[in-house]
Amino acid sequence: MKRINKFLFLFVLVFLPAYYLLPANRCLYAQDKVVAVVNNEVITQKDLSDFLNFIRLQYSRQFEGKALEEKVAAAKTDMLQRLIEDRIILQQAKLEKVTADPSRVKSKVEDIKKHYKSEAEFEDDLARQGLVQADLENKISEQLLMYNFIERKVRNKIVIRPDEITSFYAENKSQMVKPEERMLTLITFQEEDAARAVASQLRSGAKLEDLSAKYAFTTDKFSALAGQELRKEIDDTVSKLAVGEIASPVKVDEQYFIFRLDSVIPSQQLSLTQAQDKIKGFLFEKKMQEELAKWIDEIKKESYIKILEN
Image (spheres, rainbow, N blue to C red):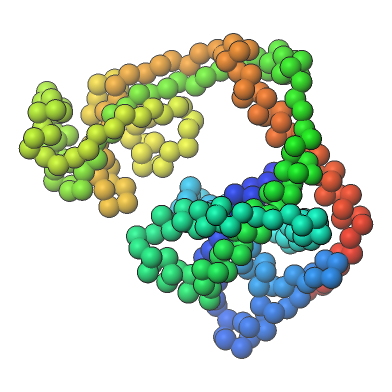
């Protein structure tokens, strides 16, 4: 199931960054090299490079530095097989005239742009890869098209029976536990000096509402479950706080944050009623992966696939 897990991940990918070490002519030649043939289409080295760039950007939203590179390296292991499967699904989808909604494509592009400080920065990043926005839109359109096709062929046919949920709960009850939940106040600043001053005064007993007249900041409430994926610098801070404690300012993306732990809800055993939606989702995705694997294997047997030697 490892291969299909990775395949499903492609449905939410969103394109871009990294490569260019060879001299120009040699690089162009290498990128044009055919690495596989799938029915009447070829897969080139450039297709592989673009595919890896696509994965890198998606992972870069959650990871950075060494962790990011480890994730990208792991994605390389069966990249060609994944790209072959993509190509087969796209071919089948086009044969059955499945389409992708242009408004959804546009929405995905806009979501990507939000990770850049400006339109110019977004366009510069594309240009560094020799791309324009139309290339990005085409890639996203393909991903949505594949998703819609799989939805029709596999996902809509899967059913989870109530007795399956009950059986799974009985067999895995010890794992049906809601983790500890921390309720926090988040205070956001644009200036480090103000953040440090407010943190110091809060520790001395000052009221947050009184300080709002003197310093510019915004406040919000949020909760964090144990084991939840937070940015490392935030997780390192909030996981060590005692109830009522004020953390020192943390800088994240040019802003400064103070965290105050307001309360802790201990971990607790979930009842069948509380756990059933989560169990249903897990069983659904498990069946989805199994049925998708069967379907892909069947289509591959009917397809002409040739991987060219290096």
